[in-house]
Structure formats: C-alpha cells, structure tokens
Image 1 (spheres, rainbow, N blue to C red):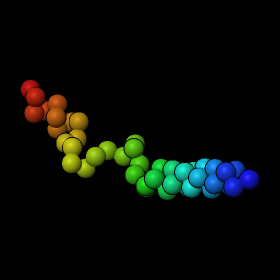
Image 2: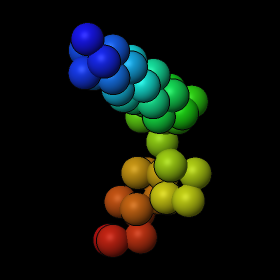
Image 3: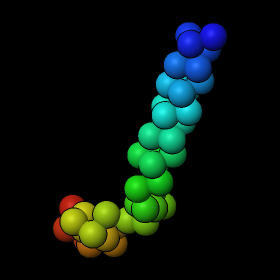
Length: 46
C-alpha cells in the first residue's frame, strides 16, 4: 500500500513540474528581437 502511495505522489509531482516548466510564457511564433528582420538580411547580401 505504501508503494502505491509513493508512486502516485511521484507521478503527481512529475506532472506538476512538467506543467510549470512547459508554461514559461515564451511564444515560439514571436521573432527573436536579437535577429535582424528578413528584409534587412536580403538587402545586406546583395
């Protein structure tokens, strides 16, 4: 019985941690502000 409780507690903690780390607030569709815009990169290469 103790093994079952520890297993369920472990699974619950892993799921909680994965939710916390997955929701870091970074939008992947948003461009990186440190990169140059694509128009400027094309103009510089000509």
